[in-house]
Every structure is written in structure tokens, then in C-alpha cells.
Amino acid sequence: MKSAFLKFEHGLNLVSLSIAGIMLLIAAVLGMVQVLMRFVLEQPSEWSEVLVRFSLIWMVFLGIPAAFRLGSMVSVDLMHRKSSPAFRRVLDFLIMAASLVLLGFIAWFGWDYAVRGQVQTIIGLEAFSMFWAYLSMPVGALCAMVGVIGNFLDPRHEELETAT
Image (cartoon, rainbow, N blue to C red; front, side):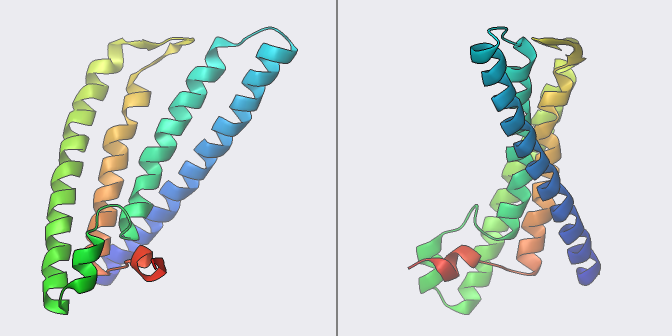
């Protein structure tokens, strides 16, 4: 069961990081298009700035699961380094529990916010609802919850090994 969950978590992490990378590429390309349109062609596009903003939001929320998986989001470095191995496991559990509670709130209220935003349109892209922008919160939080549990089952504190 543990290995099946970790395999699922690894696949989900790869998908979320791939999409986050694509969102970064979209933001960079659209940023260059925006500069070209505004300053070279002197015809500013109202849609490109909005898409850059939303792609960066999606990039952040889909990149968070990888950070949680590597143990680099919520950790107490000094306590982790100075504590005994038995207390480290307790500390890892407390960090996992606090992270899951926080991510649960983000997922719950993010979904509520997205549903309420269905009637709101995106300025510059009036054909689309704000639901798609706000959906990044619950999707990212749910993916991050899987990463938090994966880090607890198979701990990786890679930032601790590289710290001096």
C-alpha cells in the first residue's frame, strides 16, 4: 500500500511539475508578446497581461507539491538537526499534521471561492469565468496534500543536506 501510494505521489508530482513548467513557459512567452505589442507595435493587448498573471498563479500552486515532497516548505531546521531520531519522527508528524490542516483550509475555501467566482468574468477575456483562475487553489492544495503525506512516508530533507 505504501509503495503504491508513493508511486501515485511520484506520478502526480511529475504531472504537476510538468504543468508548472509549461505555465512558466507560457508566462515568459506572453510577457515577451506583451512587451512587443505595447512598445514595438504600440498596440497593447489587454488579454496577455491577464494570462501571464493566471499562468504564474497556476505555476506556483502546481509547484508547491514538489516543494512539500522534498521537505523544503515547512520545516524547523534547527530542531530537526539537534533532535534525536525518535523526536525527529514526532516533529515530522507534527509538521505533516499542521501542513495538512493548512492545505485542507486552502482546498476547502479555495473551492468555495472558485464556485462563487463562476459568475465573474476575467477582464480582458470576458468569455472565461474566474472559476478557472481560482481553481488553482484547491487543485494545488490537494496535490500538495499528497506530497506532504509522501514526504512523511518517505522523508526527504534535501535542503538540510545542502545547508551549511
